Image 1 (tube, chains in turn brown, blue):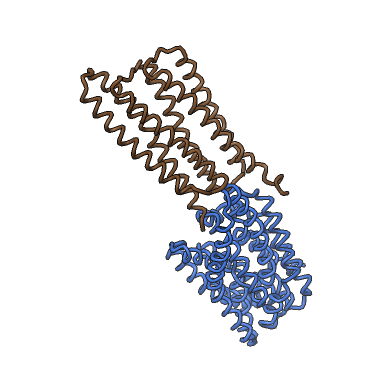
Image 2: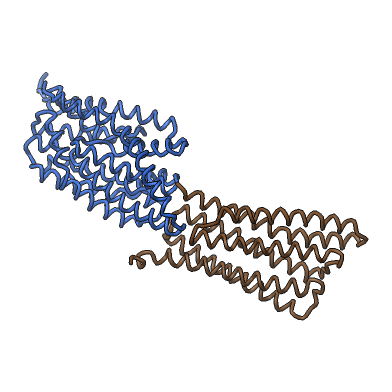
Length: 216
Length: 314
């Protein structure tokens, strides 16, 4: 009934959901690029998918800027402005990791050795699973408020698994016969994939704190 | 009309300073434009003064018998006290300054209503204590209700924003109803104004102070409240308004600043955190004790000063 009085707030809410949707699209493109070309960085789709990932990552930045402009145009309380701005900044770092991983594969022409491929795939899958849970959690923060705390535990569990896989992968790489330069190259890629779940875990905890702050 | 200038100046400075206690948090956090807050505050102050200012005016005018000259002296003495205390950096209550000035005149007149003074001093003690208690009650009740609503971040934001505007308007109403007596009650006591005229002129002068000079204070003093979480800021504004309104019904002008400090302390007690520093509390206590004493001294000094005569050849 009084919706017209809070137009800016409603716009912010809509833009946040747009940002989440855009994240999903970027994640899908990143996943396609990685899965199709992980063992062949010269595959035909890689360039296209990398460019598309970059395009959607930039679109995410634009939506974030629009949200910030609206928020600092006297919509929302200062505490909420800061919480939303910092939340989106943290989420944006994950999109940055997606891009960096693709650029490492492409720029350094990294080929993942076959003997670690299944484990890398597992690390990759868990990392993206944690992203899915994080998006659910953010959606809950701006809608039902239900299940946020439970999702923190689920994400934390996935992050621990990813850490474990990451360590075993690095150990396997340095126990192999690969030459040192390649070992370092592959290690860098593994660490970068591992950073996804680490950052997701940080975002998840931030979401929980934002919710807790609003309980009196 | 010239005699009223002291009271109008007092009302102006009261409006300029005390509006920050009701709308400071909303303005300094840029939730509300200054002009929207100032206009709302000025309207509600005037409404409060006209609708409920009578009891405070009756209490103050009954403290002592005044001539017009004494009314002007007490009014100017109160205004000077507020200025001196502000320059010294001590928190000052206009209500205490006015009563202190009236005590000075009462001493010189050898006439003072001690029962009325006792009631006023008891309320001075009760203002910060009332602020603490009411803040605790509002925090608990409103908090339980707020948690049950299970609001999203944006919904909670909208609710608190509306609450701060409504609470600020109510606070302005209470400020006008309670503090208008400080501005013009002495002129009613001197027989210069009727109660309605006093409420109207007092309300208008406070509103004028809000509209012309409250911006800086609102934007700086208000930010001290915003450092708390938004819900606590809302509780503080509401507790201050309710406390001041209760004393309006009792018919005693009190300090909105002391009510705010009490409310901030109350919120701190509920949350188990330190919201007011020891230094602030000490300054408030010093201001609380000094303001009426300084005002008494100044009003006596002014009274003697206006009765000095030049005797040629002596």
